[in-house]
Structures are given as structure tokens and as C-alpha cells.
Image (cartoon, rainbow, N blue to C red; front, side, top):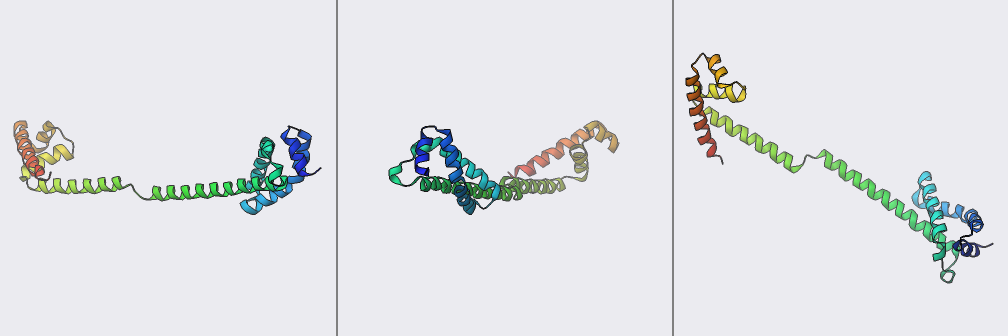
Length: 180
């Protein structure tokens, strides 16, 4: 039987006709797909998809528009081209993602620069304090000591440390206020 006749029977749900059609067209379908896709494993997969599609959509075949074999090979070619395009698009997406992963985000860079500028501004303002104020503020805010611990480390009364801290922080606030 010819492919045209078999395809009409397959459209009616005839499984034996499909088996015969499968034997008749599976070679040409695989050959065409293999030339487009190139990868043997991918080609086998696409050919199987085409033959499954053939079983499902046999009723759409119109013998008045051409031969069954040309219709089947058109399905195969379209499916193979779709697979190649899909693989290419996936590869391009992976490349874009890899490039994005290598480049730091703009916001991250901006935040690092801003933090560096802020640290430099704080250093400048700390240098404007008296040595005694700077020593108290540094122990409390950079070394993490409480006011009481600062007083013990400097062998000073707690009230004196609190006064130095208040005056130092006031001067820092004024200096940093000019930065805003």
C-alpha cells in the first residue's frame, strides 16, 4: 500500500496501517531530521515526536494538497528546525546568564563605592576631634566597649568619658551633617 492510502486509514484509527506507514516513512523521517539536527540522539527523539504527531494528526492530511510523504517530511522538517532553534535559544540564554553572573550588579558596585566614600568622610571627621574625644569614640564605636569599659580602660571617671563622648559625637554630627 502507498503512504497516501495508509495515512487515510491511520486517520480512521487503524493501528496496523500505522505500523505499516511507520515502517515505510521512519527511515526518511529520521534521515531528514538527522541532516537538520545533526546530533543522533536528538534526531531519534525528534523523529519519534514526528511519528507520534503523525498518529495524532493524520486526519489533517489533505490528499488534494500533495502526497502523504511530502506532508510527513514537512512535519519532520518543521519539528527539526524548531528543535535547533530551541537549542540555540537555550544556549544563548545560558551564555547571557553566565555573563550576568560574572559582572557585579550595578547596585552592588554603587553601594561599595558609596560605603567607601562614607568611611573616608567619617575618618576625616574623626580626625577633627580632639585626641581625647577620638580615643573615647573609637573605643566605644569601633572596638565595641561600653562607656563604663572605656572609663576603666582609660582610668577615667565615667562622667568624664560620657562628657567626652557627648562632645565628640556632637562634633561628628556637625561634621557629617555638612556631608549630607
